[in-house]
Amino acid sequence: MEYGICELSVAPMRREMSHESELVSELLFNDIYEIVEDNGDWLKIRTLYDSYEGFLRKLQHTEISEGRLSELLSKEKYIVNEPVYTYNNKVLSFGSEVFEMCDGAVPLRNSYDPKVMVECAIKLLDTPYRWGGKSVMGIDCSAFVQLCAKVAGYKLPRDASQQFKCGSVVSNLSEAKSGDIAFFKNENERITHVGILLSNDKIIHASGKVRIDSLDSKGIYNKELKCYTHEIATLVRLKVEN
Image 1 (cartoon, rainbow, N blue to C red):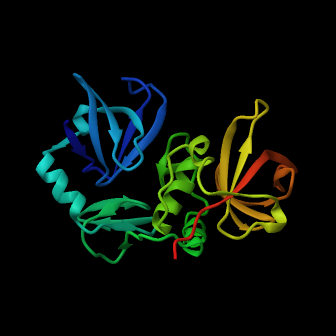
Image 2 (image 1 turned 180 degrees about the vertical axis):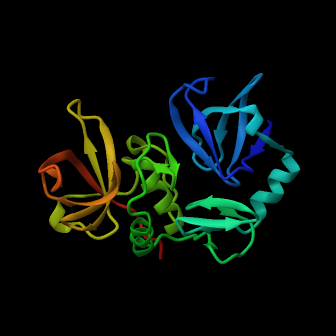
């Protein structure tokens, strides 16, 4: 198996082998991936963190040996917990990993703290929404939740439809707590949106931008638009390790 590491601040992962293809996700600095297929100018890759697949332009690929991979995996990891941080002349986005202690990063937690989840979410307020985006230059709803959870010490999958299967179900909003995750469905009952509860009647989520809206048993109510924008499906609480 061949492996690579992202040495850029951010690199796009496409659905197909074309710059015009849909952005499905992004690599952040020091994200490690395995090569699934070599297609000349493009590589099909699978990320080690969440097994997400997409196509990366080979010009943005940096190969690492299995020995180097083992070395990196054994290193203590630190994660950028500010919206942006300058590191070795690179501007890193929230959620990027580094392998040494520095001012803008904290050790990668091995236990989950919902308070940290909420603190991270608030730091990203007003970050613009971008389908497939995973950086402060543009982020989608599930990447927003995934990265906040990562800094808070919980490993979530990339997409909302996958995140939906994690944690334990909270039966209703009256029992919901800050840090719980709310999932929303479309007219076909598919999970298409996710956000983080600040309380049992407020949610922070990426929709147009990372924003705070009202939440009730029907869904998300946008006061600016004066309408409900997302229909609630279920609430989930991530497990706190003692």
